Image (cartoon, rainbow, N blue to C red):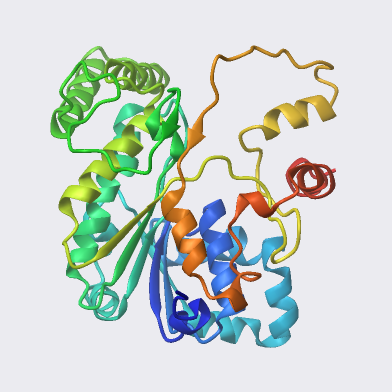
Length: 358
């Protein structure tokens, strides 16, 4: 069975994207604008104090990037008009209700028009301050579904999470949601509100000690790792993302479809809009860069008793239902890639060009 054409389904659709200046979000925005220019509107939430700053960030961190080279070639001098028609940049913050937007007319416009909400806002530092990680990764999810509940035509909420919320375990890791209060070690009951209270209590204690900001930041980072390990997670990032999933699954209204996307490793573009584009040093790239700069000459290898295998049955079902004529445009089967060729001839050259900038 083939689904309705993906490109056709995007026509006249309005999508709201949080974390719009992030790596994945800007790739998504570029792809949508390129393959379906008849999209109705993209509302992009950009973390900023006001609209002027949000527009500046959008221009410098999204449109001005090499990633948008193909779109610039397509539209030429008409690019500004096209972007203005299709994109509304909104100064906002997922750590606040209604993303901190106080313009009543703008809020109502989004509530009336948005069909799909993509939540890609996150703080991805493994050892972020616990209070900050909770605000964005955990309660940011709550603010996202609260806003989705207000939208008249909301059909789908896609939440970008991470595969590593499952922790380190042997065997096949299934595609299943977390239950509210579930922990990885099964030793302690997890209460998300109590975690928020614990963070605020610890912050109050540190303030009372009259520590400087750097000392408070270090202490709150340590506290996040401590709370994560108490419940079986290795770091603050994956712990707070797991709690964010729990809130979404419990709170989102039932007539809205929820998709939780859990990427493993994110690297450079394979084919579109051109091969090898990447931003920043990610995951395994740190080792590649250090080796390339002769920081070290050998890799130490610690043998593990197991590998991590992620079940992708749901993704496989989605692939099997896709319109065959669009598979070359919306390809997402890792088994179809020649990984050695990709790393040697696409990823590493792209890393050198765009991330190392040599």
